[in-house]
Length: 270
Image: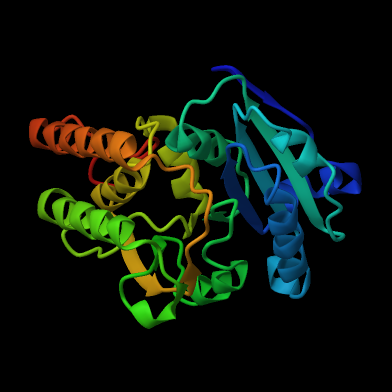
């Protein structure tokens, strides 16, 4: 891959099945050597417990980590029929860039985006899948049933998130109450189309994905999920809040000017 991205081939006999995957899971990771191995093991265990999700592939995108994230991920032993693809950015480019790299590498009919810390447990995949469809993007939500949050984030983070969402709803996506939960299930075709045109490298990338998917005619379905706050967040509240605000206004400006891209490969009126 280009843009300073290196990749590894799927490990072992799983490489033979790479074209037959039912589910690809994109996991952006930055300095996650400490908690990523346990998350990968948990994901593998859940997927292997049901033939529905086999064969599956975990696509880990190491976003220029300064620790041993890539080595730690590569050392994990996964169950049979669950493979690992490791992609690496030479330098840190941002979560949106890492997700874009991962989406571009997918091949499966369904794609899940999830955080390396599994703040939304992987078991919630089945809840999202219950409402999935070939023209549907399913969004894990902390806002629909807040009683499902079993470890809450600090009050200032919660307030910042709610304020940001109010702005997003006013400007861009009026009916989605939680755009930023890092747990989303989408058709593979949509995932790969988004990867070719998505621009935002930072934490506001979620909003761009939702805005484009809706513009292209896909349904957005918000589903309540269990969630818990995990310490050692990679978010710098002031710095990243300002970046996200800037990016939201850029998206609004692009939409007002009519410069948001159409879906690749789809002609007007189709």
